[in-house]
Image 1 (cartoon, rainbow, N blue to C red):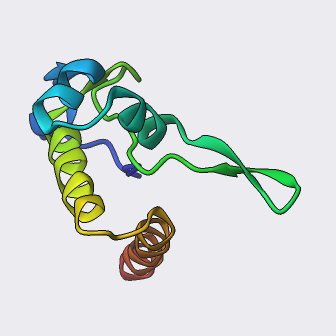
Image 2 (cartoon, rainbow, N blue to C red):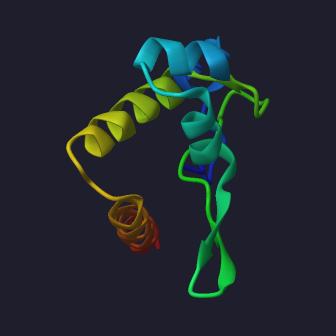
Length: 105
């Protein structure tokens, strides 16, 4: 998730672990985590569709994750393990973004 304002909370800003380490800690395949961080392409009805990333690294580098990122990964892994589709996850994230934007203005 992208933050719109500079946050001084170190839980967002300090690199806690690498992507492979986060995948190991949460017990998910590394490629799955990379897909969540970078998005991915997949075939759909004769064309290639691009799925957007669902987690935005906040610790500066795209290869290290903050504590908050690690908690996002853990939550997303939990949703996925109960059968929640990535389509539903992206729809929910879009809803939250719209609601947060409208409450700020």
